[in-house]
Length: 288
Image (cartoon, rainbow, N blue to C red; front, side, top):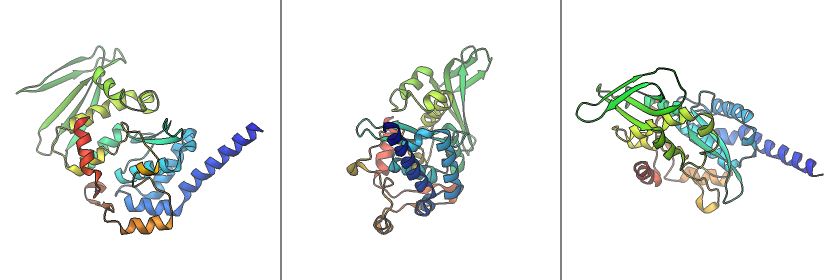
């Protein structure tokens, strides 16, 4: 009897998720948020593949998955094999509910920065034990890295950006500094931090470098959509404006709100946000 109940529960969950992915209303809403380089149909096909690779996502709440969809649509990144972003299932200890967490990947972050047109190029590299690595800051900063390929043990990670005026800037982090960032993540012991540590380390140093670049508020807040440091709470009083049930009344109300998101397809689909938490996100950017 117990096994039959569990099987029935699993079937019902998969049915709910399938309805969410196939929903015309979900596609219509995603079309409102999608950046220039992604469509709702393509995004949902990639999402279906991601959920097939990680069946635990089928146990996550509808609201948290919808939030992940919206983040992907706005940023123009997909939960694909390239690692542009990840949907990580985890149990919310406050509610006891399984939820999906959106984590922006290294490749997704680079994609956003390049499409913004605000940097000419940007990349990150991992330094392994045994590599020749020397850097200095000050009036004449320099960085030299010669990989020796004798070890897989990471010691440092660095990022270099070439600005549109030709100026170069770089940032270096030790493994201890990266791990300090990892330790404040709610997914530090699972998901991308375990399966793709080097990629997450590179993303971490790129985000730190971005703090010193002359980026627009829109780009900064696009980067900060990543909720790796923040616990998703689906209780009504703490719902995100994306974390909603799909009802006709909600649609009408949302269409009348002054805080509607205006998609700006210029520069690869970056968007302008007219939301109260714009300033809050900027503050969090500098605090972390």
